[in-house]
Length: 301
Image (cartoon, rainbow, N blue to C red; front, side):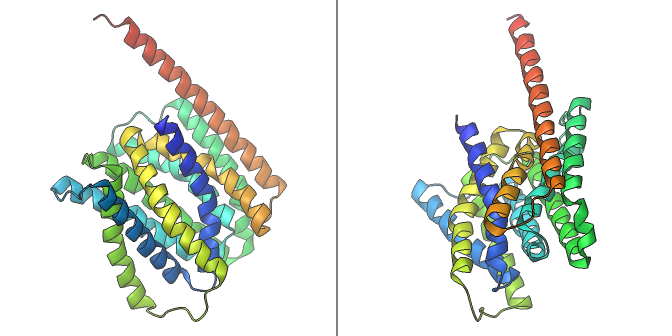
């Protein structure tokens, strides 16, 4: 039940986060938006750490885990915020739908996971076809849109590297401590980056900017990251990455309803292909689990 609750929560958060990111950078700028979010998020996570009575471990594996987490929190998120103004918010989630394929490839190479079976490859190909249909037309929108797409692809790859690296380190660090350690390292990097390349307080900050930053800092960052790394502890990196095949659908619908972003026939076609990929993957996982259960039941004591 906890695993299911974590999955549902992350899907809901990842569906709303792209739009909140876009709103948070319109005006204040992407460096202020992401730095202020992480500062608020770090304060919330450290407070949770104190209330729960947990302490950060500083042995070698723990430090490596924090560094791996920081690859996502600093590296991936910084690029996402930079690219957000160039493309519709729904496209951020759509392009992140490539995460399962990137994670599967890295997990197969780095973790020796059996994540590239023929059936799973079929599901990934179907999903990628849907994603390609949905954002392929963006190449016709101009140079900025191309930069945005390239940026989100880089961010997606960095998140895949981060999740697989965390699994490979296997530092046995609780999810809350993973996020706290990663955030503390990332916040230092964010403050340094903001000071060097910006360093100015925004002249004007709208209500929607403040609400978006507050939502991302207080809810999306602590809750989303903690549940994400909780799932990485208890599930394979490839299974966790499959969240990004569900959240794009909700993100696109939300962007269309709230931010008046286009929802064309191509996007609907892409959504259908993604849902088909999810169905295939779910059926294959169910069959694999059933076979494993039968083999376990038939194993002599």
